[in-house]
Length: 429
Image (cartoon, rainbow, N blue to C red; front, top):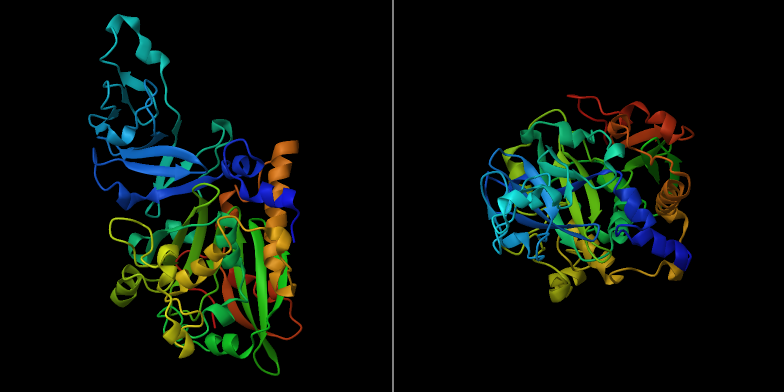
């Protein structure tokens, strides 16, 4: 378990906090490109790491991410006009470009030159992989854009969604690291999931509910190996890649199914964006696969119309179906892999009290991830040491599920399978 002090350090991400300053050194998934579909279109409210922001696409197609509130009288720029390469406040007409510069101030004398003294907080944005990424840290430390495999693929080989999760980012991310829960929380649904079907790995998961965990550090984060018995000669290994600061790559089931991944990005200390990605590095996604993802199946969800909040949420007890639970249609009574996870993670409260935990051997990956985050935050704060995983070369990795002879260390036996080679398929059982 964590001390109260370490738990506070881990979960607080506002500006000026150690973890908040750490996260601001990375490129952050801010919103889907599809949320800003047209030039001079409707702007979007965005909240990241406790900051209220406004995103817009200008006349030239550039994306701006600004402080939500006008520097004049603090009216929200959500109500501004998006026109002629800038947001014009609806209150007095002050206008800002994507860099936050005030480019027009019709309420003041032209000769005063007052507008040149005004600049809103603005964060640089780049688009890659269907996502608008932003960097919220010191400009002199801005790293290269992430090179996660799914972000570099053609559009037809990738599907990206996001959903609101109403709890601290760390609770959500720990679920992505925790492989042992799959044998329980998703036990009765795996056969129905189109991304899992027709693979022997499912039987290994269901047969051995007591995986043995081994965790190794990588340049980008952690390798988390869950070992299950397969037969007399082999172990079945599911190896998860956790990449700093909030990415996981899900071990695949069979090379014919797409890979999956997640990112858990803090909105504030009580909410996060859960990003979900399916992709195949060697082929386009099929019409059937896309239809399933668009319908909110697998790791995706069905939304309340006009929002990114799931239809199943805490206000309706996640539409829990006790009859389905009793009849072993679902283990928890909640439909869908993502909401099965979210219902349990949100049930811990907005910020769980980790001083009450009693962790076991299956929690080794979670323990190591916490340590690595805490260490990176402290080293940045106290020694100004650069965080891990800023170099794009550390992102070019894959998760895998493999059979390895007993006695072969997973990091050694699966070394080649964990390298992302452009255009090639992956290793999976």
